Amino acid sequence: MRTELETIRLFAIDKLEWIKRERRKLQAQMRESPREYLERESHYV
Image (cartoon, rainbow, N blue to C red):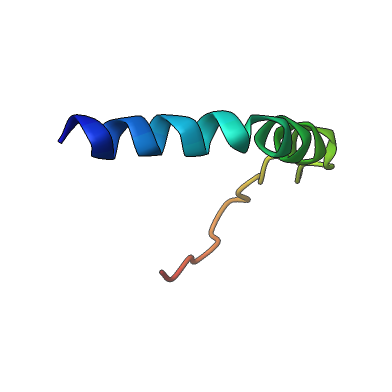
């Protein structure tokens, strides 16, 4: 079990720069404005 956890830890460390780069890209994306519901609207899910 310890070897498996160590393998996962090393994989995550190896991918850390990629993870940080992807997080920055996601955080820089434009977000949708909050939706406003008007009176008498119907919403189906």
